[in-house]
Image (cartoon, rainbow, N blue to C red; front, side, top):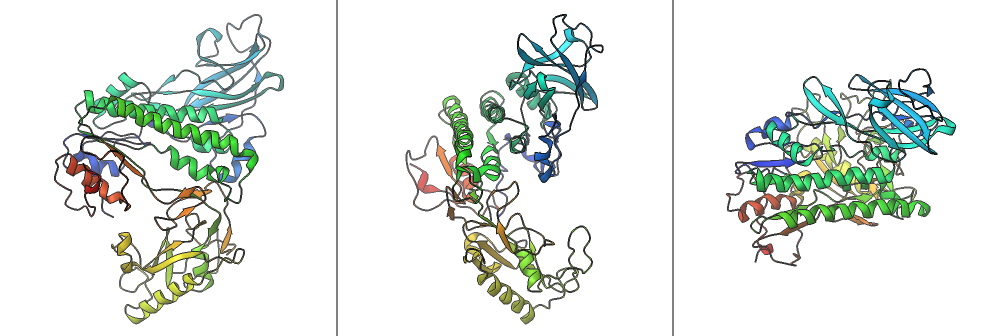
Length: 516
């Protein structure tokens, strides 16, 4: 599909989980990674004490660091005389050391954070499962803030588990920079990342995660109104990534069709799910309440998401049948021998023939040999059965040029396209593996997925289908179209309603059946 950015508006802003504001002339720079992100440091420093570290190891995120507590009796100034106990540790943020004191006062365990070992000059004083105030830090000329949330404090066992947030910029996080500065002044800190992995590995509790989700959502909603009402922007594109993150990591916790579903955990995760839905409603409700009558509101998703029951490895299948050939000497991971390889999977649902004259090390001749390779692979995928379930792994496979109905056929769409059957995901198996296993129960952190199946596929509580809702002047109230709109239809429709010319390179249509 072609890009659907609106090129005609003089002042357009985008709010994302990676937050930027930009004008159209800065769009290409944005794609290249400029301007800067809101966070100065995206890898979260997590500081627990003791055994929970092992939980994170299988995923390799290395978000944690073990810190040993030691006595603070002789190292801190101005300690209260009635201090029951006191242990200390320290951690670094942007190269600057922060000192922590753990002690018990009036029967409660408390954490003190200070930039120096002085009890009277602490930056934050927090109890268990309580957010600290934002703590100021500086990186060169950039002011920034972070905060902490003690997940567990147990002075009797000298045990602390502390979640430390990413460091968020206070200015210079937008283009033009004065927009971000004004939004920070009016709305406060923008909490950029949604740290879903911290909940997965046990460093952040569910209430803390929901707090972060809500703060980001409401900030985006308020920024949307601020930009359009008070800062002269014609349009705002805002993306909230909470649903994607939750469903990817935790769909298996709330859907019985998933192989790792545990009914004893259902209520815990379903409660998080319901809270995220409520936050989305609150976010949309705020914009509806504050926008003027002439402003059009469009709420849509860029895709759906379903639980994964089985993970299928197309690369291993191609290796087994000698379409992809690996070098005999395997080092850290299998390497492709391009001189003998006829076809490979390109992430994630397209197969490229190693074509002579097109590809650097192509060995398949154009014409009859090329078509035979495609025919053989299509036949292979159509007949591929899961030996455990007896089900066909692939629902639909075709030459890419036959996929015009799906909007396929461009120069980057590969030679063969396919869609997996409901419940099967191919997204986490983009390269051949040493074990050569073709299909296995879904595993790893990504237990929910999208993009493997046809756009209208449903499985369990999930669906690949995206959603769209529109509200504003000229929109039919309560109308549900019989035919599915497409994502590429959204921008042409918005342009039409705003009296703007349609983008010349857009392939979408105006959704006239939504109008009064």
